[in-house]
Each structure stands twice: as structure tokens, then as C-alpha cells.
Length: 244
Image (tube, rainbow, N blue to C red; front, side, top):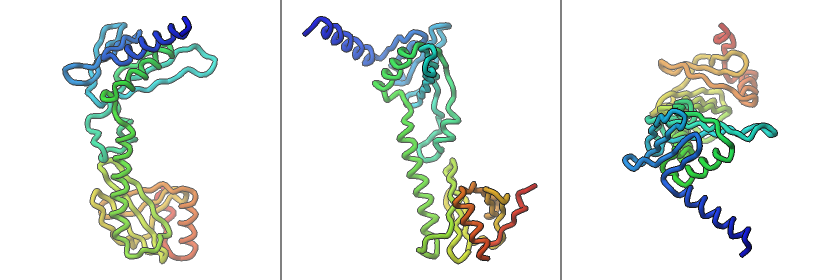
């Protein structure tokens, strides 16, 4: 083994030991696996403030510098919301509810060390992939309940779906013959919609289902299908209902 190879090997061993330890001193911050809770203790070196984050609720966002600019990055530590039960809060809403805890400016090399250390301690981190998967299963389940209540197996002319935190689904289907059914809720129950559908004439469609007025944003192809159904006389639209 050459001297250079030996030096590189020793360096890798030291790095592996550093990343495997329950404490990381990373310049502006110190990260510690809290022996009492299994969560994360983050100490800000500038003012010695200590932030405690429960296990499985730590998020990090690293903003790398643009090419050609100084080699420093912004590392932001956030806490995933406590009420983010898998399958009940949408990933978008959970991400919006994540609470920023601390943001630091550090050399990009330090930011990458922090990232690698956290990967060696996955129990500290919020599992966003598993959370998104649980939400996808929830959405598929609610959509399946709606589809099972249709009176035909023929593909619909138009199907609009929006699943919100709760979980709650807003579902509307227009059958090939122009019949419209819709539902809103966590236990969806399709009901016939007989009144004209409400639209802003562009990309929003609204209907009344009981005490609710769910709205769907139409894609260009969905808007085209809707207007084709209107042109064929299969549905009624009120184009001025949402213009005010």
C-alpha cells in the first residue's frame, strides 16, 4: 500500500467513525442524538441555544450555492408537524406546517457532512417517502369507494378528483350520457347532481353537494371534454355563476 493510499484509507476510517457517532460537531452547530428521547438536540454555536426535536420529526433543507459563487450553503432545520398522522394529512399540508427551527450559513462541505451524518441516523428524520406512500394509499382507497358506487362500468366522460387533508375527497363524475354525480366527505356517498354546473368559463368547475360547494381546477383536456359535452347538449353549465 502506498503512503497516499494509506492516508486516504485512514481518512475514510476517521470519517466513518465521525458519521457513526451520536454527536456531530459541524462548525456552526452541534447535533446530538438525545439519549433520553431518541430525538435530536441541535446546539447553535453562536449563542449556545439548544433546540430539541422529537424522534422521526426532523427535516433538513440544504440550499446549495449557484455555480461560480462562494462555496457556502444554507442549511435549514425544521420540525415535522406532530399531527401528521400517515394517511390523514396531505404531504403538501404537512410540508407547509413544518416549523423552521434554525437556519445556518456554512461551507458546502460542512452541509454535506451534516447530510451524511443524518443519513446514518434515520430514526431522527421524518420519513417523507413513507408519508407520501401512506397518503397515496388513502387517496386510492377513497377514489375506489367513489368508483364502486357508479351505476355503470363504462369509462366516464369526465372524472374529477381532489383529496384533501382529513382525509376528505371531493369527487365528480360525468357519465357518457351526461348524468352527473358528486360527493364530498371522508365516507363518500355519490348523489345525482341535477342543477347546472357552475363555471368561471375557463378552468374552474363548481357544484353544490349538500351543504358543500366543492371546486375543481380543470386541465386543458378536461376543459375541452367539458365543453364538448356542453356542445352535444349532454350537460348544462352556468358560465356566469362564478364571474362576480
